[in-house]
Image (tube, rainbow, N blue to C red; front, side, top):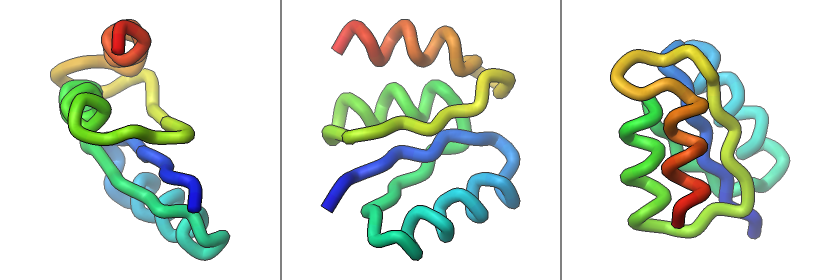
Length: 70
């Protein structure tokens, strides 16, 4: 089963994407901002990351830069 990380500070959108992916049998984890996403990447491996760009604490572009380092 493919593992996906959904990253968004909009909880309604985050949950909608999570439920849609789970309906299609993906294993989904969520993060509320870029900092949480980077921490999740250090803990686990993902086949796909779906991430918002504009978020508090760490935006999506900065998070992507950090994720690419792993």
